[in-house]
Image (tube, rainbow, N blue to C red; front, side, top):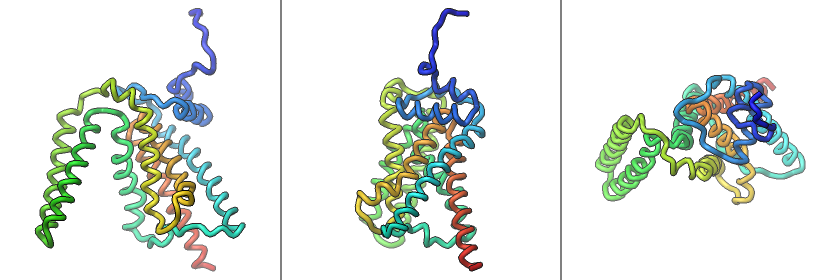
Length: 259
């Protein structure tokens, strides 16, 4: 006995997650949402595969409830905006883009920098500057000259990003970022959800906001996994989420054809 008094409320996120149970992981995630804080980024906890599966179950549970609510609204005669994803042709290229391409690109864009490591943070201003210069070059040139200038600018931005990341690879997270992390976390999750407004061709803000709740939940879960278990776990969760959605869509299309 050490004489130290502990209580359930003092259990840290790391201690709760280390029990490797679904309930404990969900509780750790809830505690994280109440008070987002950046864990030690010098090492990530083991058990990333299990964590992905435990948090995927939470994601699926929310989506089931959400879809049930949409069906209830439709049954009551509420007309929902068309989702562009429903009109996609499910060929091999589309499936690869949705299940592999989108998770990779979106997780790098929205979650890679959440660790606060300088090798990720440095990429943000490089991307912004590259995009601005590329837009200016595209606006001042036409035809093949514009395409070449923009293409070279993008390639140059990628090369500069790689060099900058390699230079800063071992730098640790600065103290000022740990203070700003809660804002960074919520910004990442909200921005990820709002980007998916592009899935709809019409609808007011009040109508579309509830429709991107699944993306907000997915983004929050992915952010939790990213900072506690590593970026690959966020990518894996995202890929599994999209893969399940594609699988359900394929089954629905097959049943319609069979009917």
